[in-house]
Every structure is written in structure tokens, then in C-alpha cells.
Image (cartoon, rainbow, N blue to C red; front, side):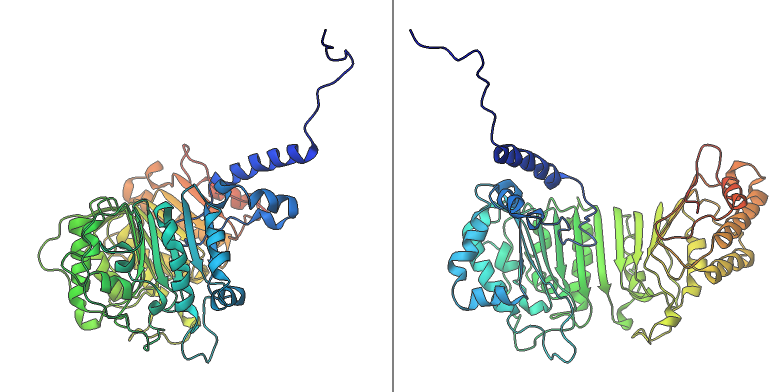
Length: 487
């Protein structure tokens, strides 16, 4: 007769190491898919920390679970990377680094630790192009599993062309690729010894891309063939264009016109369109001839662009639901904003504190109040704007008083101010009280003159007295509630 377990025996419990690994794996899996503040139109750099740096146990879990390695990051400007690639050791180490993702799909990031080249450097990082090329060579056998490829370089000439990656005769198999970024930090800072001239290559097969970020030089090259890239992006929902200026390699107004025409005609699923550092020659800035059919975007983002070139974009994309102007330069002639539902002014600075800009005319925040009054939409946000100070709010009141047509932000319902530290609480309250007075007079009084929501947050000034808090409550209708921290 077999002996049964002793009545006093207890089941063997798993070792602490097993429990610890199980718990860590569960936590890391949650962190891997937790939402972050990343947004494809602002910064594609992954901002999740590498938790394996905490200790050996955490590194052991993180470095051996394929689903945790879905994002592979290589910095192309640090010495260990160059040494491995130059002495041949990359033939074993780099493929092994990539192979750890098997069998899962993965994203590949080739980034720079240091963005700007050193002062006095004639050309940026002479090793950059060869480093990127060698890493891409190692990626070819794994390209069929790649769902995202993000490359940032100091020089546009260091980047692969879109035809190298996506054309019909490419050595890469990128059928799963959803996101592609090929961009440089400074569009005009390039290496003229590296030729970007290539014979036009057709893009014959539609891609699965939903997000595309290109710099001006790459974009101009991609548009040279009649069967160009933008004809093969039926699923694209986000397009970001960096450094499209006359300094971009291959720049021509014919290709710029081709770009805008292709966006309107071919990218029917596009929802977000972004331009970062967009500049047109002054002689080329003309309004499009004839009426333009409305092109509806959820979000139009324009960054580091002066008013004339800004207007060139706004004349062609007239109906964005949300318009974001980030670090832009406001000059004469004044920009006419589209009637978007939401306007976000981000990182607007006081231009009088800056050195002379290469704009041809002086930039000034004095132009903003009148521009915003003519927009007069329901949702307005100021984000990280040092130009938003008491003097700016005073000019805003003066612009409302001087308006012959009674423009006084009558349609404004939601005001949000985030991380704007230069104004005082009293100044914004007085500004909103004056707006309430004017709109109450025009609208016959009542809640039509009140805001539905008011939010002041981040590094913005806080309310200091009970009277300020009571005044703020009087600015918002009964259905809404202000969100403003009190000291």
C-alpha cells in the first residue's frame, strides 16, 4: 500500500525568487501598456524609463521578457555605439540586441543623446551616417516584425531615404510598419559632401503607415517621381513635416504645391497635420486662386513659423477643429486664423527679449490680442507662454475697447491656462471681468457673458485671497466650476 502524505505535511510554497519574478512581470506588463503623455505630433521619443536600471533582479526580468522589449533604443552618437560598429563586434552584439524581441513585433528607435552639434563644429558627427547605415543593415532580417521605425539625426544627409525603405524594390519587408520617422534636428545644418541626389524611384505598393514624420529634404526627394509616396498612404492619419524651408535639399515651389495638393486630394484619412519650421520664399507667398473646398482636420499644428508662411498653410487648410501654434513668430501682415473650435497658443515668448530673428520684419506679441479677437472661438488655451503677462492682458483689454465691431471674445466658453507664470491673478480676473461686462452689455446680460469653464494650473499663479476666489466664481456660469489652485 502506498503511503499517503503526512497529515502534518504542508504544500511546498514557491520560492521567493519565483514570487518576486511573477509580481515584477505583472507590474512591468501593466507599465508597458499604461498611457503616457507621448504624442506623435510633438515628441516621438519614448519617455517610459528603463526600470531594469533599478537593480539586478529588475534587469533580469526586463531583459528576458520579449514583450517588455517591444521598444529597442540605440543612441547613435555615444562612443560605445561607434566602437561596436567600427571594430566589428556589432556583428554579434547588435543582432542579439534586436533578436531578443523575437517572436513579437517591435519598434526601433535610433536617437541622439545630444541634439545640437558642438559649437565650432563644421559638420555634425561624421560617424553618424555610417552608424545609422550599419544599424539598418542589422535590421533587415527582422524588418518583417517592425511596426515602428524612428530615426533622428543631426544632419538630414545621415537619414535613409523613404525609397530605401518603402519602394517596390526595397530590401526591407515593412508590411507591418505603422509609424515611420526620418527627421533631423536642424534642416539647414547638413553635410554637402554627402549627395542626396538619387534617380526617382516609384512607390508602387500601398503601405500600412498611419503616422509619418519626415524632414524637408527627405520629403522633397519622396515627391520627385510621378508615383510618389503620398499616393501610397491610404491609411495615414498623422503627418508631421520638419524643416521644410528653402534650405532643404531639393526644395522647389513646384514640389511644395505638389505636397499640398497631394495632402488634400489623396490623404483622405488624415486627422493630424503638423509643420515644424516651415518657411516659404516671400515672393511665393500668395493666396490660392479660386475658392478652396473645406479640408477637415481634427488637429493642425504649426511650430517655429513666421506669420507669412503660417498664412500660406492656413489658406490651404481652412477648417481644423483644433489649431495649435507653438513657438511661432507673429509679424505683419497679421495672420487671419480659421474659425477653429479650439485654439492653443504654446510657448509664445516676448520677442523683445530675443535677439534679432531672420524674419525680414520685427516679431511682436502686440499682434496677438487682435488676432485672437478676430478668431473668437469657444475654446482657448495658453500653454507655457511667457508672453502672457500683465502688460499683455492690458493690451488685450485695449484691443477690445478699440474694436469697432464689438469684438470681445463673445463666443469664448472655455479658457485654459497652463504653466504661464508671468501674469498676476488680479490681472487675469480684471481682464475676464471686462470681457464679462462687454458681453453682458451686448448680450443683454445673463449667463451668455459667462465662461463654462476656467482652468489655471501648473506653474501659473495661484489665488491668494478669498476675494479673488469669489471673483473667479462670478466669472463662470452655474453649470461650470473654475479649477484654480489657492495658496
